[in-house]
Length: 406
Image 1 (cartoon, rainbow, N blue to C red):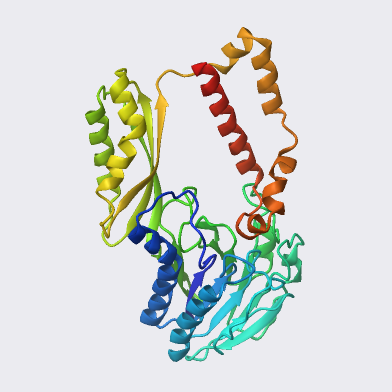
Image 2: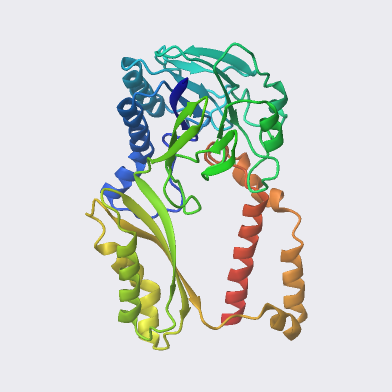
């Protein structure tokens, strides 16, 4: 029976800045800065422990097109460990670390094979004699919207055929439609495995053949919740076995707490503390967003304490915890709901205001100063349509609350 073993990872985003974090203690801040590198170390340790035949990284190794020297140096160090074990690494670059960026180059070890800007086939003969054809390309520029899938051509003469593609499945609307493809198009290529990248959520699009998004190896903001990591794949001419391997040093989570039964500050404090303990994991950090629903504390002093002191109290005991649960955001939702339709009836001003919000057509113009700024281009990715709608909804909610208070 012919068989190969490999690791499929994607979207390492090494040295990525974490979004949505404020006033972290120094130790937590330093650990956060190291988290993507810690996750990479877990990947290489697993590859060596399992003695895989090769490693695939399906795009966005680096977070920015400038590829910081720190990120390149750390990546090179881990690749040298794999080289010492005779494990080759097959890499495509994606929209974040495309080939047209400007960076100071550090040479990578000879075991690292980088696909060029056009779809190419690379041949590997494993230590046990299996022949593998790997197909892929690296982004020549940041925005690749062509259907590159049409350029993938199966070449005979191999025991296994693996496609590597950093792109977006065409039916998805939450992400920019880079190198779009359909599941049917991938199936028609008659490959044995598709190693995808670009989407930071772990997804199995198909089992026969396996078409897999492993997600990123370390969550970077509150939208990237849950365990992150990569897949260990054993592929044979009989079956495919896949095991998800967790790599994230810090995970992002959220919890909704029903506070309708709590009438005093100390009762809500206990509810939050209980929730925090549920998310504590040994040797792992957690960034937690808490949504307090149906809050109905009426005492003015206790209400002020809830708004101004609760978050600080919850964070206080986590500063020195290795297995910390740090509450990054505490969002309270009043039991009394504000009726937008009722406000429209009260005055034409409200009708006009909500109409402007609902039909706002100048989102790109409003965000232009951000994307035109050098730092904005470097650190801020263009917002997907769903993210733009979410921002507008949040702005509307804030306006309604301010108007209601008036």
